[in-house]
Image 1 (cartoon, rainbow, N blue to C red):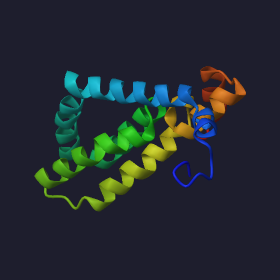
Image 2: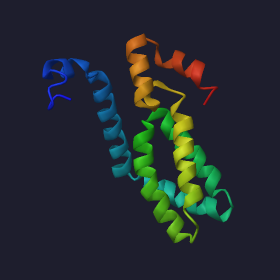
Image 3: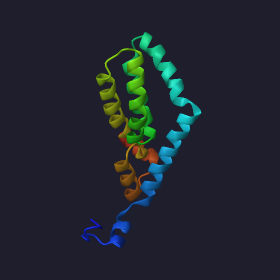
Image 4: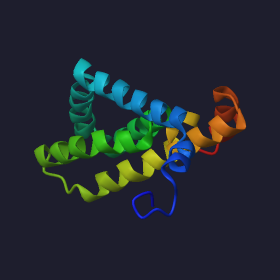
Length: 142
């Protein structure tokens, strides 16, 4: 819209909520740190044990839901999809059900907190609702 001069550049910059952008970037850094620390490799080994007990899908749903409550759901999906594809390939399982579980549980878990998704971040930023109050009201819904 700036290129076609529908919105002036200054107005476009004023419309950006930089606190949300910084929070999204910080979430990406935290997830990157977890990856470097070996968290996802540890979870992979845990999932192999869960697969033997027939608990792979519930374990995946719980993990994605909880991670999405505290980290942005988009980032959880970006990290978990390749993880699930490798896991299902090694276990010779069809990936569709597991990928759908990642998508739905990430969205469900992200409802619970301000850091769960960008929309919640904007709501928290503009409304002044605290993290615990938001969790108190929307945690049960999630």
